[in-house]
Length: 218
Image (tube, rainbow, N blue to C red; front, side):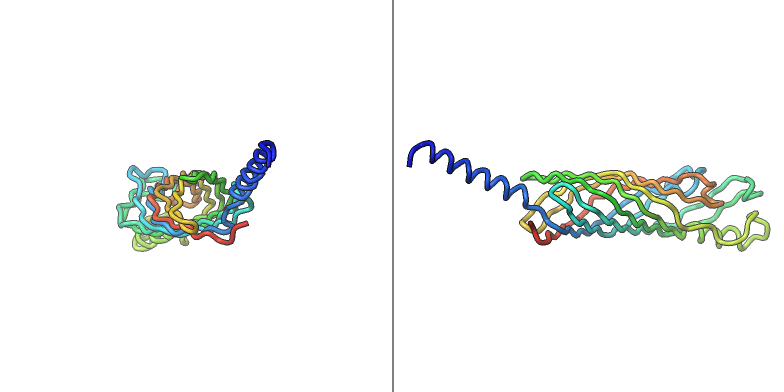
């Protein structure tokens, strides 16, 4: 075998190896995480609420770089003082100790770069948020005091939500990876008497113990 054929054969094997490596990606990734967030329930809130929770995600990969993600998170807040200055909806102002939960349901594209050592990713997700904090505030503030609130009925507890962010996965084996960190800016848009019809914001930053099971590869 002459040198030209040896070079051609080696080049063929290298090209085949690169092609196989480029096609190795999981069709499905499933993860679970701990999540921490800061929630601003009203425009006048001076101190955000700290929220602790967690959830899971499911990514169906279209190719090596692009996947469609479903992300579900739930948060439980501690009891905090809820103070609202006097206004149209609250003639004498309002205050009370309130706690509540927050859930988000988000879907959208995720882009991931699969290098040998780390897999950085970024996503933009859209969906909805649900919180009972406003219903709890209505029960605590409006119902016990006649005329304390200039409206009747529990306020809206559902809202539009959007998340933009990303993180990094570290492969531990052929089928498991570890996510040391993910940071997202999560925007919720609650429109009710307590939220003053403005956008409330939650900045979510979690150190996720996130293990991703790898599905069948191409």
